[in-house]
Length: 240
Image 1 (cartoon, one colour):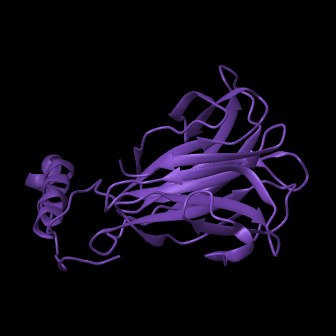
Image 2 (image 1 turned 180 degrees about the vertical axis):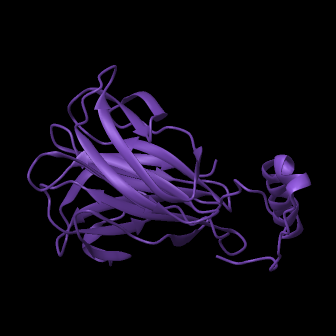
């Protein structure tokens, strides 16, 4: 911990009764001199995404504070502010106090996170988190990433093509994305429609729903795949 200054307190009997008050005042002044406060901490932003097929809706709690209430399958909460550092999360069935999954996040100052509830490889509720890096794309471009949380499909590829293009003539933009992995953001040109299709790795077999995107320049999108009576594809608007 950084110290602002060294100091010595001399206490006389006449001032003994004012010692505690004076010490607290002095500490406050010293902290202000460093540009901070006694309780100052960094702030992170966290949102919750529910990709569990059961229960139908969950509450996400962080250290006793609700991050999301009654969050249905496939739904996303808004961002909430949390203090940076060690941040525990729990997922509970909506209205229940029973924890079905938990996750401990070490949150960095001024960083955005998405905490996701999903089914792990043992078909049990689990939680993890992605870092939401909103570094601006180059001029005229937007960004898209893949979040792979479907335990049943193995590794996947992403094709980005003109709408209805024949995949036999196309090459994947992203390859071999494993389960429980979020890619970085990839840049694409705004101003015309592109079709995003996810396939089993090394094949042209499309899984989930194809998505046609034509967002404005500067925006961010995530495509999450998860299992809910078959492969589901969830388009997430990250920043508008």
